[in-house]
View 1 (cartoon, rainbow, N blue to C red):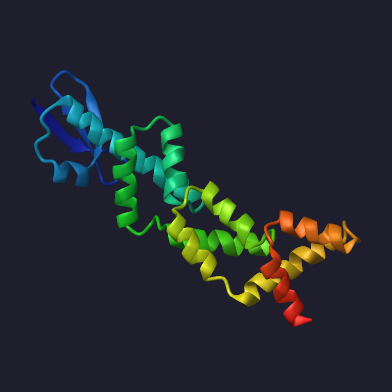
View 2 (view 1 turned 180 degrees about the horizontal axis):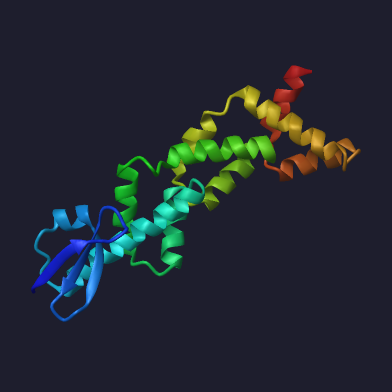
Length: 190
């Protein structure tokens, strides 16, 4: 298979690969460098798919931080090949742009600040983001008693405006993911 390579125009780090039949692919220079002699147009298509998946994933990360599972789902929803998506995510993680534990910690901190919840609700939210169980466990285990107590106090303060009956307030707090262990933290304080 014969082809020629040109600079990718305005896209830095991307090369344009032209086949003799007139078709072309945009491929990241490092992907082409690591696979110097692709054997078929299908090989070039796979490299172009990985390049496109990298670009889309980086675009999504530029808007906000994501966990790997959540980002993978978004790529698959946009009909990227699963293998290309996985290779792209591996590359992005290798660059340090994708870190599940960092994302989970930031997500929990933000959630506790804006919408205080208990560990059960936080765990469900992190699972919904596609994060691995071991990452969720480590991040939630890293919450101090003080952080949990503060979240419970803030949630109680918000919900007390709506529920004046202590039993209904406690039920509402439990729906927000707080459990009996969290309530004991408050009792220890009182």
